[in-house]
Image (cartoon, rainbow, N blue to C red; front, side, top):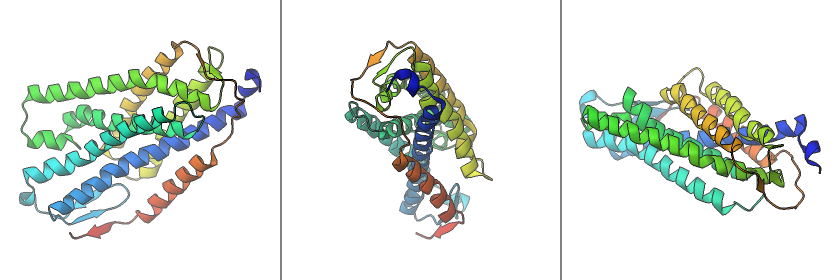
Amino acid sequence: MLLDQKLSRANFWRIVLNSTASFVMAYLLVFYINHFATVFTAGMFHYPVSFNFAKIVYHVEPYEWTHDAVKLMYSAGPLLILIAGIIALVAFFSLLEEVARVKIFFVWLCLHAFNYFFGGLLIGNIFTQGIGHVFNWMYLTDTSKMLVALVGFFGLLSTAILISRPIAISANSYFNELNNKNKPFFIMAQFVVPYVIGSALVVLYFLPVIRFQEKYSWISLGVLVLIGAVRMTSLDSIYFDEEDRKISLSYALILTALIGYLAVRFFLNGYLFINW
């Protein structure tokens, strides 16, 4: 198919739908890794908890909290998320030569995971939320907290710089090459518009609760997307191969994201109580 024919409005929205489904699915996976890691580590200290799709309530008195409990409960999730991000990056590069659309899911999973972890070090540290509780209970000095925040900042910056080429390479799912003619089309369809729509769907999912992470994570993720998009525009043209490719909807990605989005929100709408 000629390149001009591929750069149609219909194909643009096909790519957007595939990528947006991956964005939402990856975000929810990252969120629930942290969510359930916190619930299960609370069980290690026999803390009764109630949880729903967005919140965890601890049925304990203030004096029952211990340093070990806070450190483990609020660090287990972010550490698991960091590991998930690294695994996603490895999975992407293992599929580097494949045309499978699932590659963009691993890219978004990597972005969400690193944004959650390094953003937590930066923003959570400042506002004493999430993993910031750990640093607060460690009684770190202001200098130490500043160093932790700097690690988070440079971690986010490194992610933005390094992720641009993997996203550009994911174009091989739709095109034989990525050049100056189709690059703006692809960056908007695969990266920028899915970020905007996906962020709106995530906020909609958590309504009427707007959690701390959802208040600020879209800002840091938006910066990552902006830097990544700018860097991609400066990349040289990338040639893949001559195998004919068709731009179509990935029904597996879209249906999995849609079912997960609706099913989890429905089944966890009410609080579930666990008395360990």
